[in-house]
Length: 156
Length: 156
Length: 156
Image (cartoon, rainbow over all chains, first blue to last red; front, side, top):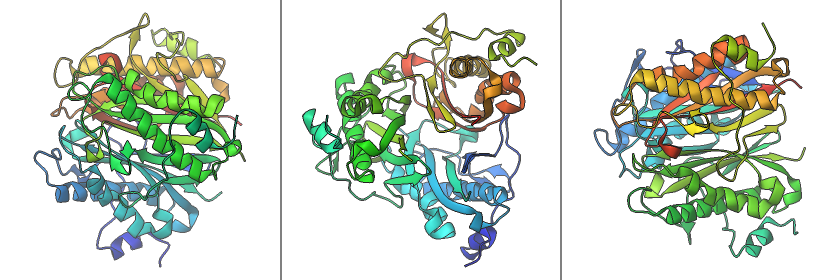
């Protein structure tokens, strides 16, 4: 397997986005000790917010999982940029936070969040295994369905 | 006091659950450096989701606090498993994240979250003291009222 | 520039609050290794919750940003206390979590969260740059509009 995150994502039939600038006064990622913190990523297509709506209302579980995958693709884009696209510099994925715009009655956040988890595990292999917190929120920036942030551990 | 987390929980009249498998593509806990990250835990009774509903609607504050305690019991179950049930390997509890399914009008997330905080402090003593973020979310996996995740610090 | 966080905040025309006691069974901040974790802070005026309501309903974007600034002021108050008000002991701000009480239709969490981010960057300078996750939640403790927590890195 390649140590290029970009190539690994391509092998899954996806294209790693080029990280854009944050839309507000924060930065995309930060290294603290051996940990890499990545800001919350939303689903983007050609740089524009995608999958607008809430689960349990206008979006199906399948669309939610696709939104989560797309947000996680942004996360991998930031990771790739931080590592110079060199997966050998990553010790492990530590944690994903998955926030899912949900109606009060929606109960399948785990199914939706798997769209993010599956991509990270499929792209990074054993180094993609992670702990996760998935919750349903009332709404998200730009009205998107899913936001994903992450903590990674770098090699010393 | 015993260094067995299981015995300490028993002394409070509760039973530490045996950690089950995650219901999706993630793992229960992860060690990164000296930190132990635990995935979001929901209230379970005999392995089944309990305390389904939202605060400010179908559940009372008291039921919410019980749900938070039960979710935190799951957190302690993961901690016990990670430490081989040996509290002497724990330096401190660092942080609890408490997510509470809430109506738009519910304002007593602190009362509910104390169900989790009190259990952790009562079971672990000084090593259970922690920082906390408690928020009201629209809904949670399996429709439960509370989800709790945690970061712990291990002895080097 | 002064190394006093209090003086830096004063230079912005604001007054750093004296950290109060948490309103429940948790602590204000915790040091773990080189990291300082601060509990979720809500907007307070003279110790009382301020900016009660939800974005997209009873509060304007501008009021939301003011609420976020006030919550972040509480965060800086905790940071100042933890550092003995000595900014030279801070390596960097790592991460802000910004939780915004929002209607299901509200989409401008980024604008609101900038109220917090701008204050932290304006007060701490380069050491204030951070990653961020901003989400819309259904409701928050005491009914306030914004809650902000943080992770900072201390000098070894």
